[in-house]
Amino acid sequence: FLLDQCSPHNHVDEDDGFDFQQGTKFKLVVDEAKAPRYLLYDVNPGEGFNLRRDVYMRIAVLIKSLNEDAPWILVLPPWSGIYHWRSRDIEAQNKIPWSAFFDLSSLRSFVPVMEFEEFLKISREPVIEELYYLQHYKEGWDKWEEKMDRRPCMHNPYSYDSEANLWRGWFFGYDRAVGARKLECLSVMGHAGFVKPFLLTNTSARSVMLDRAETLLHDRYGDSVFWQCRRSMRFAKHLRDIADNFRAEYLDSTDEGDKAIIEEDWQSMKRNHGDAIGGPYLAVHLRRADFVRAREKYVPSVKSAAKQIKHLAKQLNLTKIFVATDAPQTEYDELKGYLTDFSVYQFEPTLEARAKYKDGGVAIIDQWICAHARYFIGTRESTFSFRIQDEREILGFAPETTFNCLCKKKESECEQPTRWLIKY
Ligand code: GFB
Image (cartoon, rainbow, N blue to C red; front, side, top):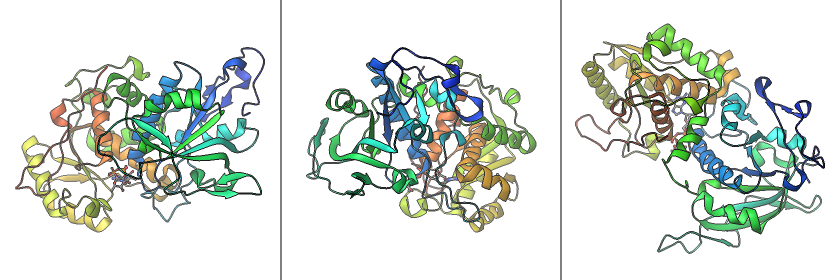
């Protein structure tokens, strides 16, 4: 049983609150009959930051629904071994808590969440009771229907440690410091909410982990609950502050001037399209690196991207261009070389800043700057660009300034992003 603090009666105690980041106190309310259960999850190891944010939303919406019946807490998977976070000149980027990137009190006003370290602290032993490895159906499918079955594992990255009687595996980079008591593979085809009855009735384990949680789909992509969850995913204040200072210093962009004021509480922030006008710059998200190969059909050459950017900046009468990119320096220099008529900016952190905020923090700073531009153009099919688009919806930009992507070639038109408009 995981909760040491469990007492026989309802119990709310300031002093028993666990200390989270920035002095936030988490009040643990324990009712023995209804002691909370813990849901953990992980995602396919190769996936990037913004795809992982998307999976968080699927699971957070599931947690919200579970809490209508019984108290469940979402244990946030630490950030470890993320494929794209490769800066070699800083310390290994492992076991990073969510508070490094997100405002936890804001997440908590949607659903109860806790860091994995907090979960370990309140656990008697570093053990997850039940682990379900989600997989597709071996035989594939002809007709889509929601279903779930216990099946032999088609691929099993865990191994059994018979001395400890535990399943060992990656566990967010904690490896052998953590184990699972039981492991099963579940073939599943369905929305995240579909596993709710299973969690409520087929298992009574105090802690349950779903690995390969990206197998589950969004319950209702784009509805008002989806947007509540998305609005609650505020970036950590220390990262927003850095981006805001950069905007003010180089891009003549302030919240007041841009008509993009942030309310303290996301729940009271409601904007109409066109309320925000943004700072006087064009922001571009130019996804390169592995995307050049993975999305060869869509990603333009640097030269072609420059042509499109130039054309757009002229059309919009904007002289400043902010570029967020994962391109190597040589490609960025090439791009700048084509844009000599404009002032081109990139957020270039010092080594010290990168060591402190990590590649993930720098990516967030880039996203936040892009979110405040008068006009944004991103890379087709990149979830990094999608998350900037959502941010602009939350701030109240006109959709035509947001849902734009570069085409393979300047000369050919291409499909533009779906306009997933905010719903309150
Ligand atoms: O965020 P993400 O899932 O977006 O993964 P995609 C891309 C990662 O690359 C980001 C870095 O999380 C950043 O770490 N990155 C990309 C950037 N663009 C920028 C940028 O403008 N600025 C900074 N600072 N960093 C999918 C991946 O990526 O692409 C999949 O999730 C796979 O795993 C696929 O790799 C090909 O949706 O673009």
